[in-house]
Length: 320
Image: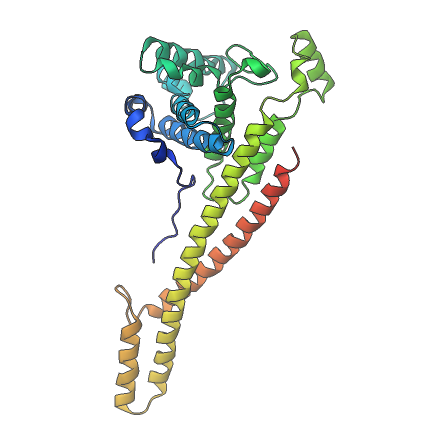
């Protein structure tokens, strides 16, 4: 039985921007990174490209922003593996070390003429609109658009990877976290005092993340859920065809058992053989039929949940 495989991030238009040739050198930088960070960088670039498309940004900027996204975590090359791959929550000291990947990546890019144009991705992707980000604590318009867009893609992929999603079912929980990122952090009196003391009270009237860019991400996620529904639906069609085929073999088997004449038994036996595929036999096809039926039930339920999820996400999109 084949599997219903799909990429968590559906196909993009990266090739249409000729990124393979223009990014050959930049992409080679990722070869030195650990597998997890390299995959994360590729995912963030994928998401960034598609967010930019939904924002109808100029093609040249989409190419630029996508390359910045590929390189946004390049500074992690210089972070000790004990910190980068820590199996537990980082201590305060470790977190301070991790935060340095932004400036380390920026400095690396600035020292390389081919990477220099894309240094902004490394430097700005952890800045927040309310001034609470790092490394410079910039706010609002002081943060370049590419940094704001990559931030949205970066947080989303980090959460998706951490929660090890295999499907978009319940992914609305992750999007809820990102919606909260667009809201001001001044609901709590302690936070208000903290912001006032740090001189960030005015900046704190906005959230960390630009809602305009998050809405574009919502469109990307909706596209991907529709793509997953398409993949699962195709697999369901495959299951239905095989269930119908083996149901027919099962009917032939019943008729063969009730037949009294040998020629009739042989007729139905031949009919069964015609329905069987490689790996199937008289002895195992009933079991295979049940596996197909179980798979059909599970995938049908998955379709239902994905359809419910996409409705929920579309409703959430209207709330911010």
